[in-house]
Length: 302
Image 1 (tube, rainbow, N blue to C red):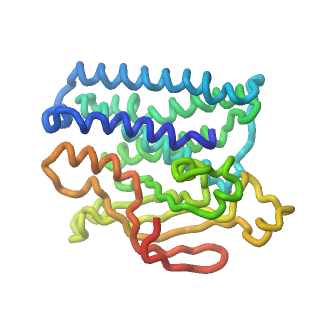
Image 2: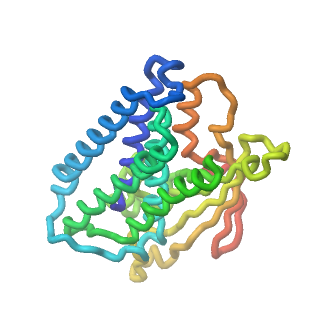
Image 3: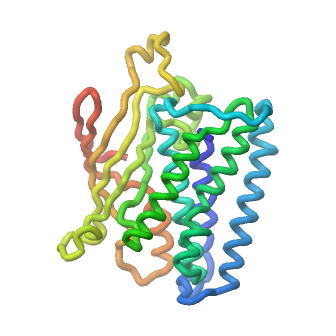
């Protein structure tokens, strides 16, 4: 699904953040051994919220579009693959939250990866099936592959390094293209953060100290490589539109430093929970952009 992917992510992130508002330290501290009440709470909550969300989408969102027989679509060339990056990001972050919640419950590492880190892939695949019965959308194998890539990025690092050395992050800025097609790109700021691919950037943010553990590099310092795109008001380029002819779409690549909030030392479980949530956002820092027109330097890019 193209429009709602980040909404799913924000929904689950908001659910996880509710734990940060409870009775603080003892409650927020992960259990050293299996805590069955916590595990049951996590499993029941995730199953209930996922089920209710899917039912709500089926009854409310998809009700606005004609139904059809199950069908597939090939949308891999749309939006310069920015929508696929959204799938990768959403699957990765939902899996991270799922694994963190099971870790909080004292569930063993193997089960965290099997039942927690696959949360994003499972949920988004269910949404993709709903897409398959909608005439407006269609089941996309490209989306499923992107979902698998996000889940694989998380699980692969845990198996290889027992930690997340490379985080997948997101940043956004408003663009003029949303005004040209607000139905597709969003009529207000909130909608645009979810729908305007021109303003979205997805980052692979690598923690330098994790790769050079004997060095004196600050543990919170990351180096990030970003991907974005420019000039899009629809999935494909409309060469008959004079405005788009003068603003041709192209890819953008970014290089910047970043801050890993999870590496900031604190004895507060509440702060650690807050840092974990906001660590999915790339910090605005000096950035070098490279695109087909050349290179540009941004003092603070977001």
